[in-house]
Length: 124
Image 1 (tube, rainbow, N blue to C red):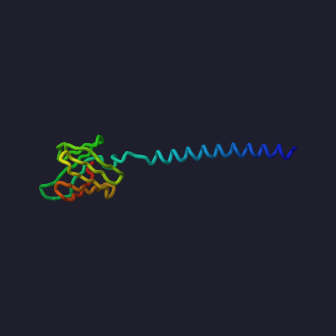
Image 2 (cartoon, rainbow, N blue to C red):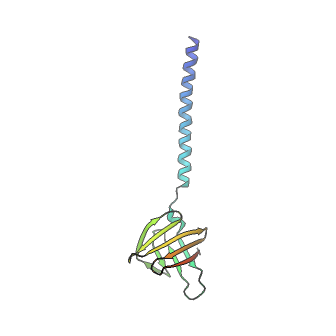
Image 3 (tube, rainbow, N blue to C red):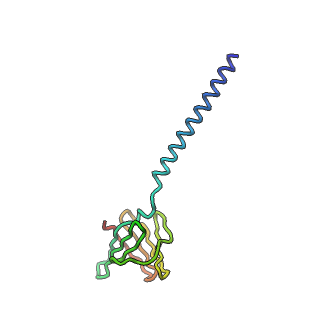
C-alpha cells in the first residue's frame, strides 16, 4: 500500500517536471529563433559608393522600401529575390542587378545590362 502511494507521487512528480521542462525548452527555442530572424533587406539598406576613382563614380542607394536609386535617379523595377547574402533587383527592361554582401561595409554589385562588376562601400 505504501509502495503504491510513493509510486503515484513519483509518477505525478515526473509528469509535472516533464511538462514544466518542455514548456521552458519551447520558450527558449522561440526566443533564440526570433532573435535570429531579421529582415534580409536590412543588410543592404543604405547609401553605397563605388570605388572607381575616375569621373564615373556612382552612388547607389537602397531604401527600406526596396527602391534602388543610382546617382539620385530612381530605377524602375523590383526586388525579385533576396537572402541575407544576396539581393536581386530586376529593372523594367528585365536586366538583373545583383548585390552580394562581401564584408560588413562592402557590397559587390553585378549589372547584367553592362555585364560588369562593381565594388561599393557603405557611406552612411
